[in-house]
Amino acid sequence: MKIERVAIIGAGEIGLALGGVIAQKAEVFYWDKNEKKLLGLSGEDLSLPEIMTGAQAIFLCLPTAGLKEAIFCLSPYLRADHILITLAKGLEEGTGRTALEFVSKIIHKGLVGALAGPLVAEEIAGGRPGAGVLVGKGRKMSAVAELFAGSKIKISFSTDLIGASLAGVLKNIYALGAGMGEALGWGSNARALYLTEAQGEILAIGKMFGGKTITLLGPAGLGDFLATALSKNSANFYVGWQLARQEKIDRSSEGLVSLPLLLGRLGNRAKNFPVLMMLKKIILDDQSAEEIFRQGGLI
Image: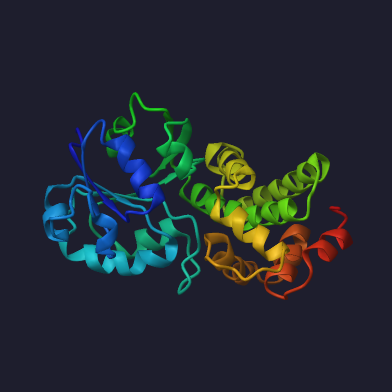
């Protein structure tokens, strides 16, 4: 199977960056509920049914909060031969499920998968390297991988749907703390300590819910966490920075939305994860980041 036409749903930074790469291998059309974002893009003069009719693969380049509405719009035009790939890395507010779990539950046509790994949009758009992990089952995933052949995005595969999708959620939550550290002026030692402690908790929580160690320590897990926690282009890093400075949050982030949902899934087990509880006190209980991290022995 060769994919010749792709629909990018969501014309934000990652959608445009991904579309720019895929356009070297297939015809790409964009759709966004905000029509202003489509100006000058291929697909601006096409309706959603027209875009969906010709597309073989559909990339959902949306935050988790936007998936329900998007799927409602897409559902009438989905076919059994469609391949849907979500890039969202959060927990769905209504159900507490990961993006991949959520999409898989409500989509009954086509093959559903995810694209995980360190894919910072600004770097991909600038032609810099990245690593993508195609998460899903079925030979059609190889056809999706071909869309990235010859590009600077190194593609690998995983059938660990739980581990890969949950790793994306966790890295966004813990990256908030890395942004806080930047605002507090942490040195290399404090940063290394935080990243080590945080990754230990990501691994433990991921395994608790059924994720595999190889996934949680691979590109979809550790790789994505480090990219997000070290990138000043990351929304989660930036929101963490604002929180530590006690500034008004001027944007949302997957980590910010997912934190209380993760705590809900963990229940009483959450107290076994000291860094997570620090983030809870800072973000949900509105306590001083500097004081909480000092009490926790991180600074």
